[in-house]
Structure formats: C-alpha cells, structure tokens
Length: 321
Image (cartoon, rainbow, N blue to C red; front, side):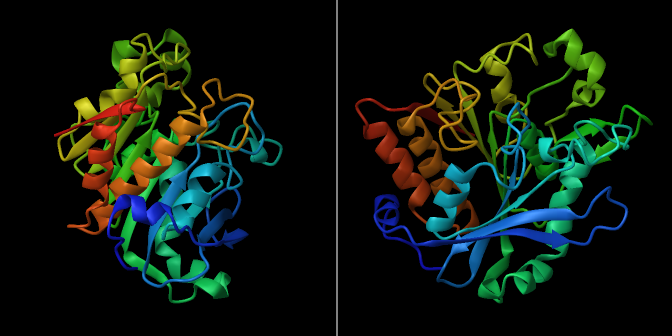
C-alpha cells in the first residue's frame, strides 16, 4: 500500500470496493457462529485492517454487519480492509437468541471477544474470500467503534472495568491492535450515569480509562447530550480522551449529535443530525488518523489537521496530548 503525497490526493481517486458477506467464522461456545462482512479495494496488497464495531439503536439492521456503510465503503475505497462483525447484541439476532443467554442483552464481553476471534482467524477470512487471499497485512490493525461499539473498542484499546457478576477486573486489551477511533463512545461510570443505566447495565459503572494506552482518536459531537445514558451532557463522550493517557487526539464536531452526521448508514431516519458535510469530515479525518498511526511518518494526519485549521468554516476542532 503506497502512501499518497497528501491527504487531499488520496481522496481524489477512490478505488472500487469489493464487499462480501456473510463470512462465517466457527466460534465454539458462542451462542451462534460469528458472521462478518469484509470490504476492501478490488486491487492492492498489504492492506491494513480496520475492525468496525457497530452500536445499538432502534433500526433492525444497522446494528449488524450490514450497518455503517458510509464509513466502511469510504475506508475500503481508500486502501483499508474493513471487517464488520454482527455482535450478539445485534437487533438481527433478537429472535434467534434465548433472552437468558449469558451476557444478554448488550453482551459487553462477547463483543470484544468477537474482535479477538476475527484476528485469530484472519487466515480463514482470507480463505473465505479468494479475492483477498494474501492481501491483508496482519500486523497493521486498528479498531473503530460507534456508541456501544465505542465501549467495545475502548476495552480492546486497554480500558478496564469490574465484572458486576464476580467482582474481577476485566482486561480485554488486544496487543495486535495498534490504533483506534472511538465515535460517540461511552464515558465514565459512577455518578456520571443515569439511574436507569447504573441499575440495568451495571458494567458501565466501573469503566476505567486510565490504562487505555493504545493511541486513539476520540470523536465527539458538542450537541450529543445522550440524556438516556448520562447526566453530564456532551462532555461525557470526551471522557476517553480526557481520562486516558496519551497519545490521544480529540475531534469535537460542531453541531454533532450522536449520529455524527450519519455514520451508521445512508439516509438513516434515527440520525437526528444528518449532515453530508459533517459525515465527510468524520470519514476523512478518521482515515487520515489511522493512516498515519499505522504508517509512522505518513503525512495524512498532519495534512488533515492543517486543512481543518485553514478552513474558514471548520466542522470542528482537534486537540491532542
């Protein structure tokens, strides 16, 4: 995968995208086998990999391998292989799984384990999609998650929590993941949570970002109050930046609500802040961040930051530590 001369050059020539689903991975002990979608440019080798964790929500299929096309297609068109699992929390499985399945309904631990399973079976993923055989770079892996998927990604990046069932400290950090992006992710626990969340989803109570050491970009909307989750308002979604050690960057989107302009799907009715301009900013800036993190010295992230600073009407601001 050759480096573009600038971030802007990379966006002028997107590649056609190959997308295959479902690719089924055998997962003994899981309630159902893990299904994933794989999207990649039709040409190119040594493709870096993005693991994309879906959120929850009211729509039936966005919380599955069929969601988040605006992100998956963009990243694949610009040189990444994107792998999207259907987590056990997916709305598409609600009629399939016994409601008493351990971990239901959000399956916080299983979600992270799904990503480790994918990494363990990258050879099987390639074998299932002959057009990808030998084209993935197994050493350049990133994780991205939106909303509940952001919680999943944070655990893989090193965040910890206390298992409410047995009181043990849970460490699901995945060393094969070299960088991450948290989109409208969940923040701290404790008194930051609404009473309903603290009571019904106690695993949120003890979220600890102090050991989330893997480099990450946190993306938060300044209008994302998420009143059903937190009493703190939009600032809660920036917690993974402020409460984790560096290196971290924070992209705050002006006017951004929980959908961040429409990341979960094309023309999604539940996206209250639909904005092609905001979505484009998320696509470009996340791509540039991951490009430069996985390829140290690549100029994409610096070029993207310079372009944002020079924009007379910028979609947001970036700070780093």
